[in-house]
Image 1 (spheres, rainbow, N blue to C red):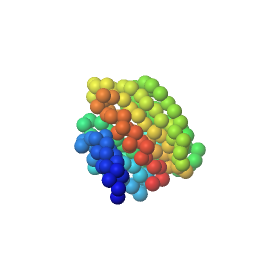
Image 2: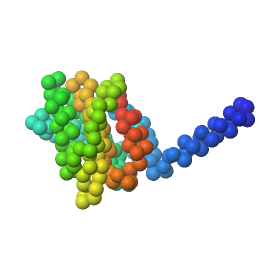
Image 3: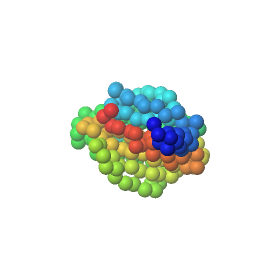
Image 4: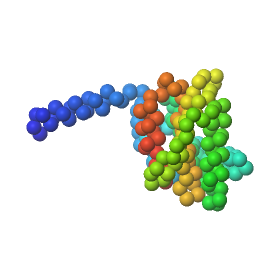
Length: 171
């Protein structure tokens, strides 16, 4: 390798390492049961429980990791009918915003192989101000929520972007 290319490669590596926080130990998670893939900032744990999405009773699996009080999570559930997909997505969004006593600051559609809607909301958790950034998507009859909740000044925008842009419904 010529000297200039080696130097350029080293500079790129140093720049990339400078952007990484030792607090975020990113790892790929491919969850076959819940049918998604995502990068998590720490080792996640998973559990499932029955939930009520505005009258739609279903079992939701949740995979989540926490770093310095910020929660990075993916929830997924398989619905019994295609007619339930849109109401379930709306109920998930409403429940997430309600959980933080929040108000929606912005919403946008995110194009891609599996289009999603993204919501940013401000609220409180355990008496502290938090910001929720979440994407809601569906693939066939499975609905998903990918969520980051944390104190706005403590969750770097790069960490939110890394997590949400790595999220792949359907695995």
